[in-house]
Picture 1 (cartoon, helix red, strand yellow):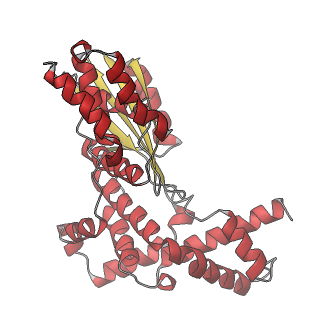
Picture 2 (cartoon, rainbow, N blue to C red):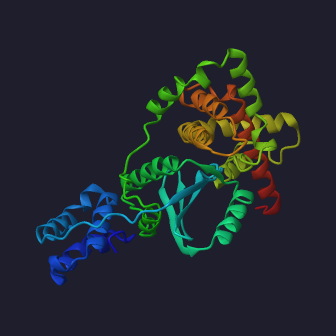
Picture 3 (cartoon, one colour):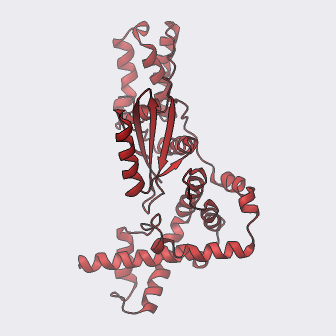
Amino acid sequence: MLLHPNREVRTHVPTIFSQLVRPSAIAPVTLRRMIVLRNWLPEAERSALDQVIKEVRLARVECAPMAPVQSIEAYATPFDGSGIQGVWVFARQKSRYQLGAVMVRQGQGIRNAWGLGSMSKGEVKSMVREISGGAMAKPVEPAYMKRLVSHFIWLGQQQGNPPSPELLQVAETMGSADWPPKPLVFKKELAALEEAPDIQSLTSADIARILNESEDWPVKTQFASSWFEDDARVDDLLKKRTDYPLRSREMLAQASTLIIEEILEKKRDVWGERLLWMALWARSCKDRNPLPWQDFFVVARKLLQGTPLEENPLMIAVAVRSVLSALRRLEDMPS
């Protein structure tokens, strides 16, 4: 209830709690969970819960430690065209496994969280095959998940939207309460990656090759197959600002330029951050054949540094795919 989506509900819970429950009756595990949840609330909503926590501590209730786990395996998908990434973590406790899963979305925060308990090794293997195939999830360092979740908790806080209560189950699955809301500072991250030997060793020819090859990502790679804009704004632009239906390559090129100017330029930072997250994701990947994180970094840098989108092959490809997707919708549902 402390993370109820209705602000009025969650802000009244601590007051009701303090009226009905003696501080000394609070279990150590409950105290630990209160402290974790307190950090995930928007700052303006913490005072009442802080008072409850203070009273419980004064009653000499000890905060329970997080239950230890023997091993952790994390998997994460690439970011899709709508800015969503899914992360799954499997933690072993003796002969059984716990699952915690999180879905984040750019511009929103923690979109969803859930978990499963007492899974067998066979069930874990089956789920890993499923998410690795259909969802394109790759094994990643658990540290990547912590950075990701901390950033998106913070992002939700900025909009007054704390994460769902199930995120607590995910945190306990990992044996970690160390998920303080903390934004990823993209400029600093870009500067830090700039100093990496893998980037320093790139020549101008390497950079040109990477940028040129990025044009083929939406068509030739699975990870970028959904990288296009597909909302109603694209459809409206095509109907109002072009000679729809488009019957030549020249008309398609003009429509793509329109999408770049009217939609993608306004979402430059969104795509730049998405590519930077992709670089961090690929860099943390433990797969035998990881995607080259340097490629994502090079494209992200161009976007975040303000290079015209007309000079960015990936963005041109995204615009073309956006137009083609809109044309299919308009053919299927003519007005």
